[in-house]
Length: 89
Image 1 (tube, rainbow, N blue to C red):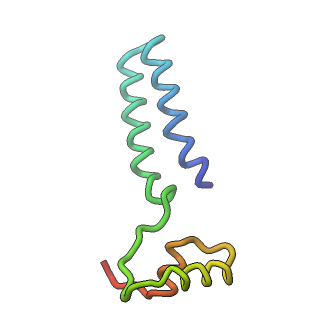
Image 2: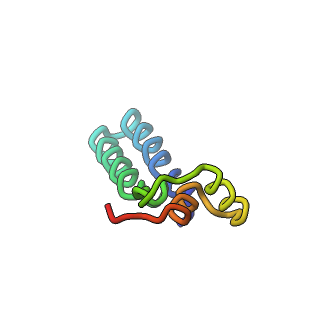
C-alpha cells in the first residue's frame, strides 16, 4: 500500500465516522472512530518511515550533503546511516 493511501485511510474513516455519528447511529459512529484510531496507529510506522538510530560517530553535514548529491533518491536518515554508521538501539 502506498504511503499516501496509508495516511488517507484514517482520515477517511474519521470523516465517515463523524457523518454516521451525527446522522445515523452514535454507537456505530463511535466504533468507526475507534477503528480510525487503530488504523492510524497500526499504519503509522510505515507511513512515517524508519525510526532513526544513533550514529556511531558525529556526522559532518557536508558529508551528508555530498552523499545525498551522489545518491539522489536517498533520505537524510539514509545518508546519516551511511556516513556515520549506526549502533543498535
